[in-house]
Length: 317
Image 1 (tube, rainbow, N blue to C red):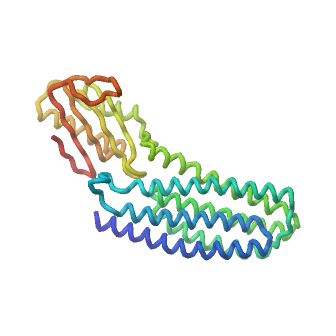
Image 2 (image 1 turned 45 degrees about the vertical axis):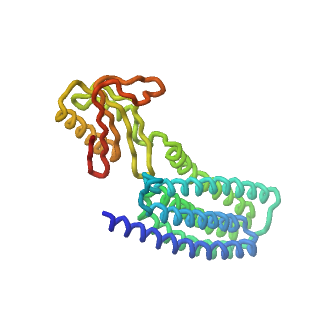
Image 3 (image 1 turned 45 degrees about the horizontal axis):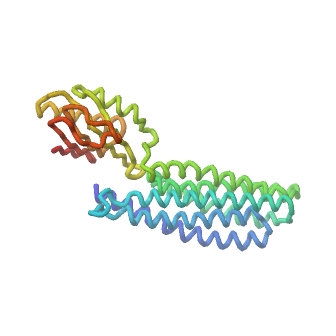
């Protein structure tokens, strides 16, 4: 398992390094030829791709951090580094979309003659490059950090393809307003692709309940386990985009230790199979505990059991 993880990490690093080099070269080319062609759409693409370089660099740094093992200071490891990188990437995209939108409005008010042939040639190169990078990143897109970089490159591929069509339309019609119109479309595409990542990563950073894991449903499923009287002080959060954790107080009847272990295992199985929660800390109590301050955890019963289930391993004490 560790060998597989290290291999996957190495693969992500290589893809990200290749992507950074190729995208940086394309940013320079797009900016130079965008200025030469007087095309705001190409200049917008240069800005879009420049944000991709930052996104890919942040993702590469995050992958490096995520590979570091947990220690006494970071007991959950460094998985949140990737989440933080994805959040910063998305924020830069939001700001970039606003900037491109502003420039497009200015260009509508002050039209500029563009050179469509240069637009189409440079954009065609960009579609090929971004498409290849997006395809490579797609294989690693289970990680929210890499998924953020993938969405960057996918949106670039689509927007650059639109620049080719826009260049052809300008060449045939001579309508210069098509260029800033394309820029507005690119800005909207950038904004749309980033909002979802902002929401997801912010929810993780604020330790909100994971999307797709309804707290009410989890509580009902735990309470449905035979022998459970009540589930309270229930908390669910994400360590990173792919790993959820749970902590809860569970009231059970006056049962033997063997029976309590059966209840515990049944509950862990439910959490794992129904909700994909692999790290659970469950405190068993004979009676209810005080609900003041969200049930602070001082048991009033005479039995307390802490259980941890992580990646198929279970221990209790």
